[in-house]
Structure formats: structure tokens, C-alpha cells
Image (cartoon, rainbow, N blue to C red; front, side, top):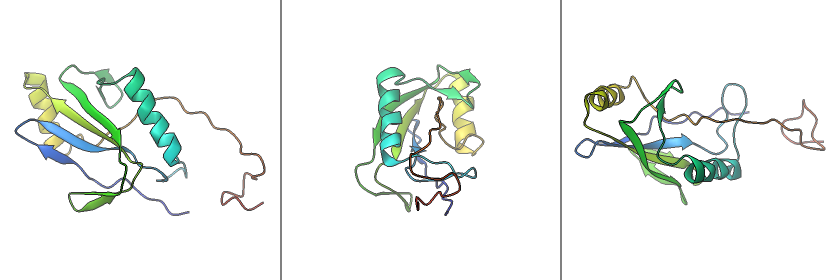
Length: 141
């Protein structure tokens, strides 16, 4: 199975202190051979938008009031950002960083790459697909 990584695609508006980037990319598999379908990515985005819109934290450790999600949506078509293509179905988020002292520290960490992407937090449940053997990940039965 091919392993795809989320490209380092981030678009900055330094005047407004906005950051745009992907949260989840459909059919991108990690080193554990796990990934989400386009429907699962869409469901995660919609769940966030309905239940947690605007909330942010840093490295899943502590919440912050200096960063606020201001847009959260699914790309309807393949889109090129900073010369890299993001596929249709990708969950995108735009965050605004305020101009407080903590916001300044956070913005510097983003611009220098110390903080370099979005990471969704939530619970996942594994389930077997009937008719597919554990050792047959391609779906041949």
C-alpha cells in the first residue's frame, strides 16, 4: 500500500494573522496503514463544525484563547495551494491568531515551523468489514 503524507501546505496572511491548511486528507494512509475515506473525512469536519467550531488547542495538551478557527470546510475540487495539490474531499481549516502576547508567541512558532500543522482530536472505533479477511487489505476475498 502506498503511504501518502500531508504536504506541508500552509498559506499565511501575515497582515490578518490567518493560517490556512489541511486537517485531514482522504485516503492518506499513515505509518500504521490507517486512513480515512472521503466520507469519514467529511463526517469528521461536519461533527467538528456542529459541536466544536472555533475551539483550538496546542498539541492536544492545553486550550488557547489566542487562536480561533474562523473557517472549516471540505474542498469540493482538487485545489492547488503554494504549488501543491490537495485532493477534493480534504478538510481545510483557517485559523486567526490574535495580537496578545501569547498570540505573538504562537504566531512566531507557526511561522518558524515549530508548530506546523493541524491535528484533529477525537475517538475512533475499529470495525471489521464482513467478507474481508484481516490479512487481505486489498479487499480480495
